[in-house]
Amino acid sequence: MLKIAFVSGASRGIGRAIATALAEKGYHLSITCEKNEQLLTDLADELAAKYHVRVLTFVGNMGDSTFVSKVAKETLSKFGQMDVIINNAGISYVGLLTDMTDEEWNRILSVNLSSCFYTSRAFLPSMVARQRGSIINISSMWGRVGASCEVAYSASKGGIHAFTQALAKELAPSHISVNAIACGVIDTDMNAFLSEEDAADLAADIPAGRFAETKEVAQTVLSLLDSPYYLTGQIIGLDGGYI
Image 1 (cartoon, helix red, strand yellow):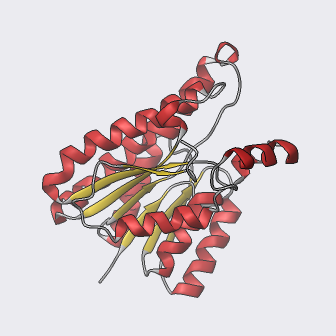
Image 2: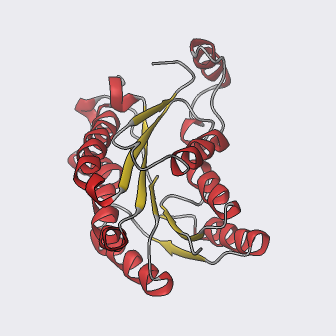
Protein backbone atom coordinates (compact mmCIF):
# COMPACT_ATOMS: atom_id res chain seq x y z
CA MET A 1 0.00 0.00 0.00
CA LEU A 2 1.31 3.43 -0.97
CA LYS A 3 2.30 5.54 2.06
CA ILE A 4 3.26 9.21 1.79
CA ALA A 5 4.72 11.47 4.49
CA PHE A 6 5.74 15.12 4.64
CA VAL A 7 8.55 16.21 6.99
CA SER A 8 9.64 19.83 7.36
CA GLY A 9 13.10 20.79 8.60
CA ALA A 10 14.50 17.43 7.52
CA SER A 11 18.09 18.23 6.55
CA ARG A 12 19.48 17.53 10.01
CA GLY A 13 18.65 16.77 13.64
CA ILE A 14 15.18 15.59 14.59
CA GLY A 15 13.70 16.02 11.13
CA ARG A 16 16.45 13.96 9.52
CA ALA A 17 15.96 11.17 12.05
CA ILE A 18 12.20 11.15 11.48
CA ALA A 19 12.54 11.12 7.70
CA THR A 20 14.99 8.21 7.94
CA ALA A 21 12.69 6.23 10.23
CA LEU A 22 9.71 6.78 7.93
CA ALA A 23 11.68 5.76 4.84
CA GLU A 24 12.73 2.58 6.62
CA LYS A 25 9.01 1.85 7.11
CA GLY A 26 8.39 2.28 3.40
CA TYR A 27 7.05 5.84 3.28
CA HIS A 28 7.67 7.91 0.19
CA LEU A 29 8.66 11.38 1.32
CA SER A 30 8.33 15.08 0.69
CA ILE A 31 10.97 16.87 2.77
CA THR A 32 12.03 20.47 3.23
CA CYS A 33 14.74 22.64 4.68
CA GLU A 34 15.48 26.35 4.60
CA LYS A 35 19.21 26.56 3.96
CA ASN A 36 21.02 23.21 3.87
CA GLU A 37 20.14 22.18 0.33
CA GLN A 38 23.11 19.87 -0.10
CA LEU A 39 22.39 18.06 3.17
CA LEU A 40 18.77 17.62 2.12
CA THR A 41 19.72 16.33 -1.33
CA ASP A 42 22.26 13.93 0.15
CA LEU A 43 19.64 12.61 2.56
CA ALA A 44 17.14 12.11 -0.26
CA ASP A 45 19.68 10.20 -2.34
CA GLU A 46 20.68 8.07 0.65
CA LEU A 47 17.08 7.16 1.55
CA ALA A 48 16.12 6.43 -2.04
CA ALA A 49 19.11 4.12 -2.52
CA LYS A 50 18.81 2.33 0.81
CA TYR A 51 15.04 1.97 1.19
CA HIS A 52 13.87 2.20 -2.44
CA VAL A 53 11.47 5.07 -1.79
CA ARG A 54 10.84 8.26 -3.75
CA VAL A 55 11.91 11.45 -2.02
CA LEU A 56 10.94 14.95 -3.14
CA THR A 57 13.03 17.86 -1.80
CA PHE A 58 12.13 21.51 -1.40
CA VAL A 59 14.22 24.41 -0.09
CA GLY A 60 12.49 27.43 1.41
CA ASN A 61 10.95 29.12 4.41
CA MET A 62 8.16 27.13 6.07
CA GLY A 63 6.86 30.42 7.49
CA ASP A 64 6.01 31.53 3.94
CA SER A 65 2.53 30.38 2.94
CA THR A 66 3.32 30.73 -0.77
CA PHE A 67 6.27 28.34 -0.46
CA VAL A 68 4.23 25.82 1.53
CA SER A 69 1.39 25.94 -1.01
CA LYS A 70 3.89 25.23 -3.79
CA VAL A 71 5.35 22.28 -1.86
CA ALA A 72 1.90 20.80 -1.23
CA LYS A 73 0.76 21.28 -4.83
CA GLU A 74 3.86 19.62 -6.28
CA THR A 75 3.82 16.83 -3.70
CA LEU A 76 0.18 15.96 -4.30
CA SER A 77 0.73 16.18 -8.05
CA LYS A 78 3.54 13.62 -7.83
CA PHE A 79 2.14 11.30 -5.15
CA GLY A 80 -1.61 11.88 -5.36
CA GLN A 81 -2.19 11.70 -1.61
CA MET A 82 -0.84 12.62 1.82
CA ASP A 83 -0.97 10.27 4.80
CA VAL A 84 1.32 11.81 7.42
CA ILE A 85 2.29 15.41 8.14
CA ILE A 86 5.27 15.96 10.43
CA ASN A 87 5.58 19.64 11.33
CA ASN A 88 9.15 19.77 12.59
CA ALA A 89 10.65 22.99 11.23
CA GLY A 90 11.59 25.31 14.07
CA ILE A 91 13.98 28.04 15.13
CA SER A 92 14.90 29.48 18.51
CA TYR A 93 15.85 32.81 20.03
CA VAL A 94 17.67 33.10 23.35
CA GLY A 95 17.69 36.56 24.90
CA LEU A 96 15.71 39.13 26.82
CA LEU A 97 12.26 39.97 25.51
CA THR A 98 13.12 43.66 25.63
CA ASP A 99 16.04 43.08 23.24
CA MET A 100 13.89 41.31 20.66
CA THR A 101 12.87 43.09 17.47
CA ASP A 102 9.50 42.89 15.75
CA GLU A 103 11.13 40.98 12.92
CA GLU A 104 12.67 38.39 15.25
CA TRP A 105 9.36 37.90 17.09
CA ASN A 106 7.39 37.50 13.86
CA ARG A 107 9.93 35.11 12.36
CA ILE A 108 9.77 32.79 15.39
CA LEU A 109 5.97 32.70 15.23
CA SER A 110 5.80 32.23 11.47
CA VAL A 111 8.36 29.42 11.23
CA ASN A 112 7.34 27.58 14.39
CA LEU A 113 3.58 28.09 14.54
CA SER A 114 2.14 29.50 11.32
CA SER A 115 3.89 26.76 9.36
CA CYS A 116 1.67 24.19 11.10
CA PHE A 117 -1.38 26.06 9.85
CA TYR A 118 -0.02 26.36 6.32
CA THR A 119 0.85 22.67 5.94
CA SER A 120 -2.37 21.46 7.52
CA ARG A 121 -4.51 23.72 5.35
CA ALA A 122 -2.68 22.62 2.21
CA PHE A 123 -2.63 18.85 2.77
CA LEU A 124 -5.82 18.22 4.75
CA PRO A 125 -8.25 18.08 1.80
CA SER A 126 -6.40 14.95 0.62
CA MET A 127 -6.69 13.37 4.07
CA VAL A 128 -10.31 14.32 4.61
CA ALA A 129 -11.28 12.96 1.20
CA ARG A 130 -9.74 9.60 2.14
CA GLN A 131 -10.97 9.72 5.77
CA ARG A 132 -7.56 8.85 7.16
CA GLY A 133 -4.25 10.43 8.13
CA SER A 134 -2.09 11.70 10.95
CA ILE A 135 -0.56 15.05 11.86
CA ILE A 136 2.28 15.12 14.36
CA ASN A 137 3.65 18.47 15.51
CA ILE A 138 7.15 18.47 16.98
CA SER A 139 7.03 20.84 19.93
CA SER A 140 8.85 21.50 23.19
CA MET A 141 8.44 21.14 26.91
CA TRP A 142 8.81 24.94 27.04
CA GLY A 143 5.44 25.17 25.35
CA ARG A 144 4.01 23.60 28.49
CA VAL A 145 5.77 25.61 31.20
CA GLY A 146 7.71 28.42 29.49
CA ALA A 147 11.42 29.20 29.55
CA SER A 148 13.12 32.37 30.74
CA CYS A 149 14.83 34.25 27.90
CA GLU A 150 12.90 32.13 25.39
CA VAL A 151 9.55 33.88 25.52
CA ALA A 152 8.85 33.91 21.78
CA TYR A 153 9.93 30.28 21.41
CA SER A 154 7.79 29.24 24.37
CA ALA A 155 4.81 31.20 23.05
CA SER A 156 5.11 29.57 19.63
CA LYS A 157 5.30 26.09 21.11
CA GLY A 158 2.40 26.79 23.48
CA GLY A 159 0.48 27.88 20.41
CA ILE A 160 1.29 24.56 18.76
CA HIS A 161 -0.22 22.73 21.72
CA ALA A 162 -3.48 24.67 21.50
CA PHE A 163 -3.47 24.28 17.71
CA THR A 164 -2.99 20.52 18.11
CA GLN A 165 -5.80 20.07 20.61
CA ALA A 166 -8.28 22.21 18.69
CA LEU A 167 -7.54 20.69 15.28
CA ALA A 168 -7.77 17.19 16.75
CA LYS A 169 -11.40 17.88 17.73
CA GLU A 170 -12.13 19.28 14.28
CA LEU A 171 -10.67 16.26 12.46
CA ALA A 172 -11.70 13.38 14.74
CA PRO A 173 -14.91 12.77 12.75
CA SER A 174 -12.70 12.29 9.68
CA HIS A 175 -10.58 9.64 11.42
CA ILE A 176 -7.52 11.90 11.31
CA SER A 177 -5.36 12.08 14.43
CA VAL A 178 -3.51 15.20 15.52
CA ASN A 179 -0.90 15.00 18.27
CA ALA A 180 2.22 16.84 19.41
CA ILE A 181 5.49 15.66 20.93
CA ALA A 182 6.76 18.05 23.59
CA CYS A 183 10.48 17.38 23.40
CA GLY A 184 12.86 17.99 26.24
CA VAL A 185 16.56 18.58 25.66
CA ILE A 186 17.55 16.78 22.46
CA ASP A 187 21.14 16.36 21.32
CA THR A 188 20.95 18.60 18.24
CA ASP A 189 22.70 21.62 16.76
CA MET A 190 20.08 23.85 18.40
CA ASN A 191 21.77 23.13 21.74
CA ALA A 192 25.30 23.48 20.42
CA PHE A 193 25.59 26.93 22.01
CA LEU A 194 25.89 25.28 25.43
CA SER A 195 29.38 24.97 26.82
CA GLU A 196 30.55 21.51 27.84
CA GLU A 197 30.13 22.47 31.50
CA ASP A 198 26.64 23.92 30.99
CA ALA A 199 25.57 20.86 29.02
CA ALA A 200 26.79 18.58 31.80
CA ASP A 201 24.95 20.63 34.44
CA LEU A 202 21.75 20.54 32.39
CA ALA A 203 22.00 16.78 31.87
CA ALA A 204 22.43 16.34 35.61
CA ASP A 205 19.14 18.19 36.17
CA ILE A 206 17.26 15.77 33.92
CA PRO A 207 15.97 12.73 35.86
CA ALA A 208 16.99 10.45 32.98
CA GLY A 209 20.52 11.85 33.35
CA ARG A 210 21.17 12.71 29.70
CA PHE A 211 19.96 14.51 26.59
CA ALA A 212 17.63 12.55 24.32
CA GLU A 213 18.84 11.26 20.97
CA THR A 214 17.08 12.32 17.79
CA LYS A 215 16.26 8.69 17.02
CA GLU A 216 14.16 8.58 20.21
CA VAL A 217 11.94 11.33 18.82
CA ALA A 218 11.66 9.35 15.60
CA GLN A 219 10.71 6.23 17.56
CA THR A 220 7.97 8.21 19.31
CA VAL A 221 6.64 9.36 15.94
CA LEU A 222 6.46 5.76 14.74
CA SER A 223 4.68 4.74 17.93
CA LEU A 224 2.03 7.40 17.37
CA LEU A 225 1.57 6.29 13.77
CA ASP A 226 1.01 2.73 14.98
CA SER A 227 -1.64 3.90 17.46
CA PRO A 228 -5.38 3.96 16.71
CA TYR A 229 -6.73 7.30 15.48
CA TYR A 230 -8.71 7.44 18.73
CA LEU A 231 -5.43 8.60 20.30
CA THR A 232 -5.70 12.23 19.29
CA GLY A 233 -5.39 15.72 20.74
CA GLN A 234 -2.53 14.67 23.00
CA ILE A 235 0.65 16.47 23.96
CA ILE A 236 3.17 13.66 24.49
CA GLY A 237 6.01 14.62 26.80
CA LEU A 238 9.43 13.29 25.77
CA ASP A 239 11.67 15.00 28.31
CA GLY A 240 13.26 12.29 30.46
CA GLY A 241 11.06 13.29 33.39
CA TYR A 242 12.28 16.89 33.40
CA ILE A 243 8.79 18.48 33.51
